[in-house]
Length: 298
Image 1 (cartoon, rainbow, N blue to C red):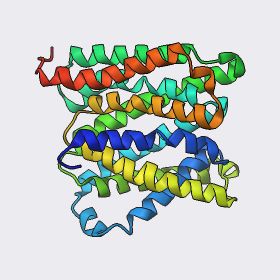
Image 2: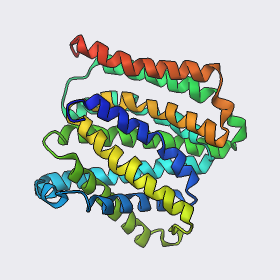
Image 3: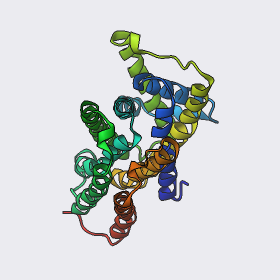
Image 4: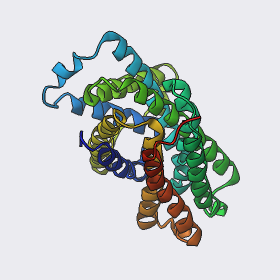
């Protein structure tokens, strides 16, 4: 996978596609869900071979940078799962998540200090168009108006934060091993959430009370966090954050299909859904082809 960053990227996106499904199935609230996810994922990294020797390779400056990014990851996941819980809809939140590539086309040039690329902007707008088609065909009547609006705002904020931290990772991951970097980001996010619970929201913390929740959370931590996050960072060593987030636009497609299968959210299964999904797929394949033509940035 080190020699094929696109394969690593798409494997991570496929795994990420299960996260909203598991997030809905696990019965605890969004804050507690992210806390447990980050705690278990961090602990699991401790048993990875040669983990501590790899961790020592990070400088203090690198650790501080990835700690800050970890806070953003925690905020992204909180707003993401809060959006799902508020409207009780995977499809709505994933539709909002499609904005990530559009945001990245503007954010990444500032963070990575690269020139603005008109190609990225146009592809981002095209991807947003595909997401919008899916979003506008959703059954909004099944969700109270106030819940729909709040879930939409939370989902949009989550997308903006995701675009920001992925752009930061693209800039700073180049010379770092993704395993210790993932650990630093997840463990710092866990510390951030722990301080939040202690200072502001101790009453909202929820334990994993059932064996079903424990099994789902372990799957969540190992496959959809440890492995997926590390693969995504490995890919970012070779590709841009925008390219990564164009591929991540497949996550809504995967997630909505699973939502249809598992939760009967079949109001999305119509001609418009297929049109929207086709546009998203087109952006995933068109972007690397156009990039290979070495189109000059403006």
